[in-house]
Image 1: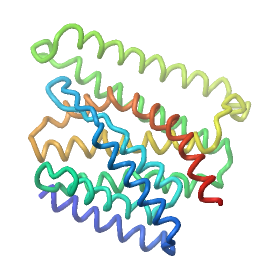
Image 2: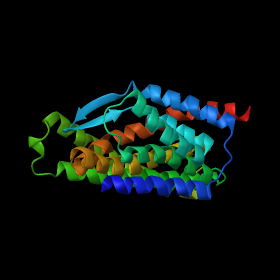
Image 3: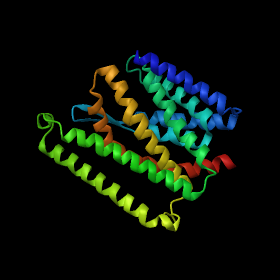
Image 4: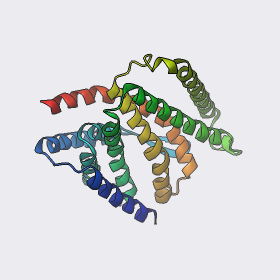
Length: 269
C-alpha cells in the first residue's frame, strides 16, 4: 500500500512539474546533468553506514549533488536527475528490490532546491532571510520535539548506554539554546532590516533548500519508507535523523555554495 502511494506521488510530482514548470530540454543542461549524476553516483560508493540507537544512518554527499543540480538547472532537470540517479544506482549497486519511496526522495531532493531558487531568487534579501530564519526555527523545533520524546521514554536506558544518552541530552540542550539565541537575535535586529546578516542570497537559498530536504524528505518520509521495508520504528528513525540532520544542513549548505557558484559560472559561458 505504501509503495502504491509513493508511486502515485511520483506520478503527481512529475505531472506537476511538467504542467507548471515546462522547459525546453537543451544539450548543454543535459550534459551538465549527466556529469553531476556521475559525480553523485560516485559519491554513493564512499557513503558511511553508521549503526546508531538500533538503527542505520547513511552519511553521504550524493544528496548534495542533487540539491545543486536542482538549484542550478531547475525543476525539469531535478525530476530527470531523480529518476536517473535511482536507475543508475540500481544498475551499479543492485542491493535488492527497487523501492519507489526512495525514488520519490531522489526526485524531491532536487525539486525542493529547484523550487526554492525559482521562487525566491527575485525576492528581496530581507524576505529570503525571513524565510531562512523561519525554516531554521521550524526545523529546530522538530529536533527538540523528537529528541525530547526520545529521552523521556521509560525504557530508554535499556536501549542505549549512558555515553550516548548524555550526548543526546547535550544535543537537545544545544538545540534549545540555539533556538533561543535565534529568536532573541531576530527580535533585536528586526528593525534593522536584517543588515546584520551578510550571507549571500545564494547561500541563504541553499540553507533553506537543505533544511527542507532534511526536514521533510529525511525527517518524515524516509522513516515511513524504512518502516514499510524493515519495520524500523518510525519515531526511532526520526530521532536518529534529527541528530544527523543539523550537521548535514551545515555541510550541504556551505560546501554546496562553492560548487554552486562554479556551476553557475559554467552555465553563463
